[in-house]
Amino acid sequence: MVMTTDASAAVCPHCGGTGWRLVDEDGTQVARRCECAESTRREQLLEQAGIPERYRHCTLDSFELWNAEDPTLGRAKRAVEEFVDLYPESGKGLLLMGAVGTGKTHLAVAALNALIADKGVRGRFADFTTLVLEIQMTFDGSGSSRDILRPLIAADVLVLDELGAGKVTPWVMDLLYYLVNSRYVHNRLTIFTTNYSDFAHTAGQETLTDRVSARIRSRLFENCRRLELRGGDYRRFRLAEASERSTP
Ligand SMILES: Nc1ncnc2c1ncn2[C@@H]1O[C@H](COP(=O)(O)OP(=O)(O)OP(=O)(O)O)[C@@H](O)[C@H]1O
Ligand SMILES: [Mg+2]
Ligand SMILES: [Zn+2]
Image 1 (cartoon, rainbow, N blue to C red):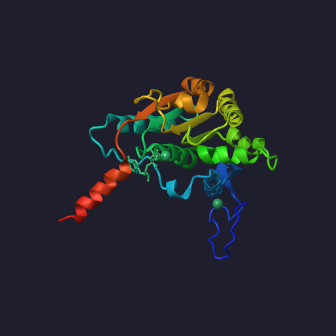
Image 2: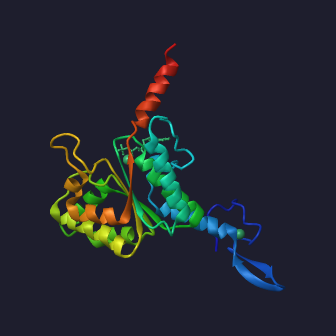
């Protein structure tokens, strides 16, 4: 049944709003799901995915290869396209690594949007810092961390944005390992983004392993294709462009 709250909303001319229509197959009438029901389902999936407002517009088409000197942009975009095309046979998840503003979240959300729109995948977006805070708030017994983690474990595809951000206690780290490992053992694919690198470029700089423990990092090695974005900050590029246009 297709629900419409607005009385003036048009009723689907193919099924009259039932979500089913009779089609003729080899001389026999059979009931099939109407396309309108499928598009309603995809809208619901999109709603349930929890993609933050400011990233909803992110698509693969809108991801520009703006820096001709940076081969990692095109490489990452192609890898994400391949991941989407091959899904559910993509094999591995993705680990998008790179500095601020290089387009990691854009690409991760673009993959999620495409998988929902094209393949009806049950996807979820979670921001690492928010997740850590939510788990920490259950510490006083006011809620259950399992309830927070359950939908993230169950999602067909999960985007875990900003892995390693924020301060994580060993107790929360154990629960995050439980999340990452549960998805791993169920063969569910995850797209991670992180600002942290595998190598310390300056003395004392923290690596991803320092931030999320060797246990979690080693799971990602097994289960993710690593994509490094080495180019610059897209936000700065846009700002520079805008100021160039405004100066005569
Ligand atoms: N190649 C690109 N083409 C078009 N838009 C881009 C591109 N790269 C980034 N953007 C846009 O720039 C903004 C910043 O990108 P994004 O948030 O994906 O960066 P990030 O790598 O996740 O940065 P952070 O480390 O701060 O989270 C977003 O609005 C995004 O849509
Ligand atoms: Mg980001
Ligand atoms: Zn219909």
